[in-house]
Amino acid sequence: MKRLNNTLYVTSPDVYLGLDGETIVIRKDERTSTRLPLHNLENIVCFTFSGVSPALMGACAERNIGLTFLDPNGRFRARVSGKTRGNVLLRKKQYRLAEEEQQRLPVAISFIQGKIYNSRKVLERALRDHALLIDVEAVRTASFTLKETLKTISECSSIERLLAFEGNAASAYFSVFDNLILHQKDHFAFKERSRRPPRDNINALLSFLYTLLTNEAVSALETVGLDPYVGFLHTDRPGRPSLALDLIEELRPVFADRLALSLINRKQILGKGFTSKESGGVIMDEETRKSVITAWQERKKEEILHPFLKERIPFGLIPHAQATLLARYLRGDLDAYPPFFWT
Image 1 (cartoon, rainbow, N blue to C red):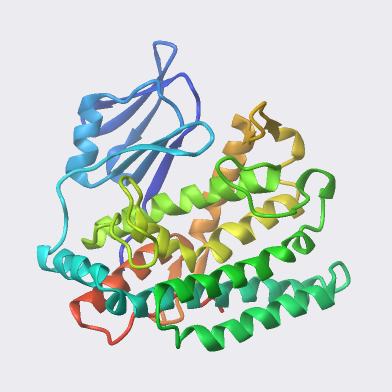
Image 2 (spheres, rainbow, N blue to C red):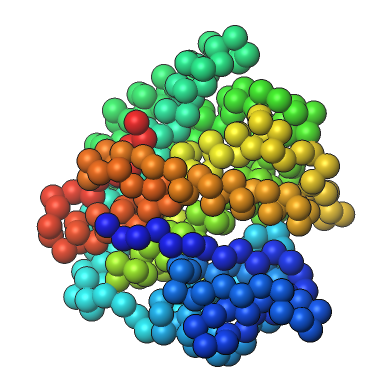
């Protein structure tokens, strides 16, 4: 199994990244503030536009270290990539399946099965751990809806029908999501999912975590030789990492939603760390963003028993494990793509 290396998140707006031999040099105000060995890194994510030296860009491309630029709100701006990795035959198989709906439908169904199963697990955990603090009847009803949906989607005959089932399941899940927020209700009440821009604090937090997860998925897919921009569920659009968005469907409830709830309920982040813009969108301040990233990195180190591989791996390697299983399916080594089912 692949080794879990570090991700460097650059959040300060006035930082410049350079290269000195095999070392990243992080400069601020014309002085060197930090030096980090390049070989320990898997990804660099910049929430700043101050700059990265061409030498460092070249070194990242050569060593397959992901270098991604996001705006301060976490929206994707650019990504530096090196040579295409993997067997060209694998990508050709991916492209062929993506063009034929009945060929890509089984994979798309697996992604949604994982998403609905894991969403239900989040609700069931709340029922088990916080029955005295939540609307038990409402949460049970939503959980039952997800359970029944799981029974039917395996027989879907089209992507359109699958997306309809997925939409209904997501509606049921998010209709009770506010129940899972046990503290700081005044600042993190959840009404509905909103994006582009997020309209409240909880949606700003979720969108930020989904962006981090998407970046992890892009890196994982590129590492195993798949094209993250050609998907089986999401429609292909210029600049849209459709396959990465496919892959995170099954991971969002476990990776992002549960972490968001933990950060709020444990008061690791506070409402004062969010600001409403005149446009109606909500953004996080730098300190809150750092707290979220720190918690994200700690969560990635936690070990979990992978349900298919039967091997204990860090949370942070789950996107890589799923990308590997998808590649094995496309090569014909597996009869079906096994989604990640949280246990």
